[in-house]
Amino acid sequence: MKKLALLSIVVVLLFGCGQTNKNQQKSEEKSSEIVVLTIDELYEKAPDLADKEVVVKGTVMHVCKQGGARCFLMGSNEDMNIRVEAGEKIGAFSQEMMGSELEISGVLKVVRTEADAHNPGQEHGEEEQAHEEDEETEEAHKIIAEAQEAAEVVYFIEGIKVKEL
Amino acid sequence: MKIRKLLRILHRDFGYFIVGMTIVYALSGIYLNHRHDFNPDYKIFITDFRVELPALEELSAEDVEEALVSVNEDVIYKKHYINNEGQIKVFIKNGEAVINPNTGEGVMQYLQRRPFIYSLNKLHRASIGTLWKWVSDIMAVILIFVAVSGIFLLKGKRGFNRWGWWFMAAGIVVPLIFALLYI
Image (cartoon, rainbow over all chains, first blue to last red; front, side, top):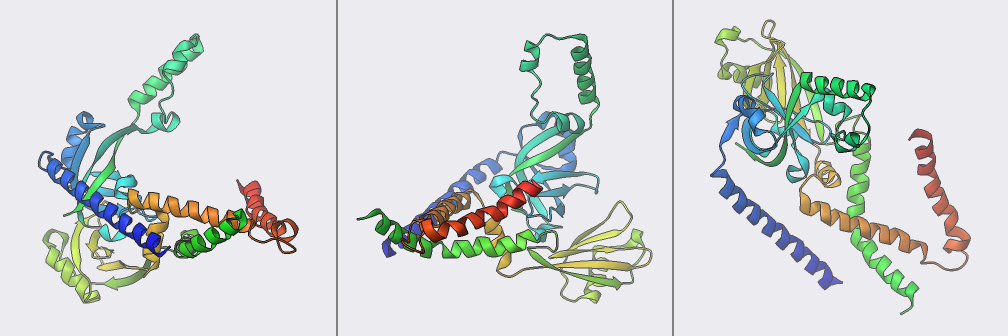
């Protein structure tokens, strides 16, 4: 039992250290290629960067008080901000990060607030096409399409890595 | 080896092994249950104050820093900006302050990690990376094993069949009632 306990501690330590080194190597390689954007620059280019990996830097203006699952990075002013989800890779942001400059690597996600709230999984496409479309359905689709066009676009980042500057 | 004897040995050793983890989850669980009553991770100290500041157009980082240090000499200034309400929002190490530029009145929030509990909560939330997620999964499986194997350890008058099942049923009924009533 003693041996088993010691062995498990050694395995956990080795595995943990290995992971860190690998992550460090990978991140060093990537950081030399990717351009770091400010929040203002990110919003300028956001439509082209949707679903792509981005690196942004900004000031932490708010950290979610329920465990730090997300934070908000601020650009040139309070209104120029973006939500960053910590996700599994970052884990959590801490309240002590408030006011710190962070460099976040993550995937820029786009949601259309109204449309996505009512149809989160975009589960409207193929199955519906198999149905016969009557006038009412056609009208409903038209309304949904118009709502999607009119809806406010909201961007957020699914965080992968965080660096305090 | 008889199955009951094997169970007893495994239950005993895994039981010893899982003590630490059980305390981590139980203790932090109490704090996290009360997350709407108080901040489970930090003690928050709130101070009202009044300071003299120059006009906004002339306000520098040094002015803000000096003003806050006059309130509490331990304050470490990070940065400030003017928020949408026209107030001066100041980030300090482990906290923040908001100052009305017209009156100089302000409120400072200073956060202090709850010693020990802060770390337990982090472990409980599994918010320290992927490796811990898997380690805690294994611990959870061990905890389930210890709980279930415990059912079969004793024979006789105080065994599961004649005595234990009442208690086990009670332990299941309590959360079940809440689930049926509130979910």
